[in-house]
Length: 144
Length: 343
Image 1 (cartoon, rainbow over the protein chains, first blue to last red):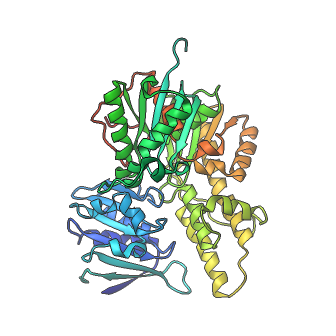
Image 2 (tube, rainbow over the protein chains, first blue to last red):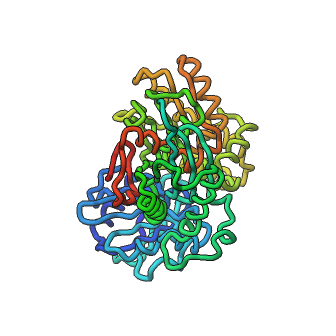
């Protein structure tokens, strides 16, 4: 487990880009953190690291957006508005998890039972006082 | 157009709703059935297991049956089947596509692939019988924020889109932060009526390189920061003022960018579509801006703003008259963009 403090959105994007370089096919990133703590910014960085030039827009309503990178396909989930795990099962969520692509799941804490054990968990927190500072905690990926 | 009426069966299953509709000549609704209105288990007699998008699978046949019944037609009477093939959730899209293909094949009728976002645009053709391109359309919903130059029925040029959150999503998330409930759009709108829209100066994001693109993520974070400041000081949240100021900031950007695009294209008509088009404050602000610019404003009734198959059937009609048919190997394209064709 390791912790990083980012001072602004740009640094959060840069962290995502850095993490992207360390991912392997089939990896699943489970993101947890309140609204506006930088989860989508982090995914922008991941996409950048994969050579994806498209806008990374929030999939809150569509549940998933998929992008073709140079090496991997990236599936960006947001399960924010899911009421229960059964609902997600019904739309075929698990099929994505066992492909050779990369899955990033925002609000993964809402569907803990569906997240495979080997997933990398990343927690986003707003620091008291400074409105732009974030504490980002990574579990399941060694610090390097 | 003279001659025989063209009857299209439209099928929509891109996200949550399963819907089927029968529409004549792209503009007249004979039926428009949405899954939440149907008592599925009762009609279908049980659950189909082991299939990805079970909800849609359960709903699709009863919904199509009901659409035909309400339209008082037999399946054989339709001239073509139109179906959403993107953007949306792949598993969900595939259910509608599989049903549409099966019907097209067995009935020997043409299949038409419809872009969901174009469907939202076409909702305006249903509610405004005289409306014809060219016009500029804002499509704003929970999942989409697009400004599109509708050059012709089948030619759309995207002039602006969101780079992060969709407009409707911003409303829902603010409602959640303020503890108002779901869906957030109508609740924020109602609360805003009693608030001061100038109480807070929330950011309105413009891009230098692409004038009509949107960004609502920064607005969301700015509102959350204000809420956190009040909570840290244990002060009472001025909920109505926050809602009014937020709504004003969001609507300002939607109106300004759309009117900017309208002015550049020189169009006389502006349409708004999608769930956010149901917002009365947005409509009022558009009415004011359009009347100033001597532009006519169109928007569909609320029922046609949210996801439905009638708008899909309308879009399919305009492809039908151009002989734009899809092959039976049509596939779902979850990231389908407006103006693209993937078959």
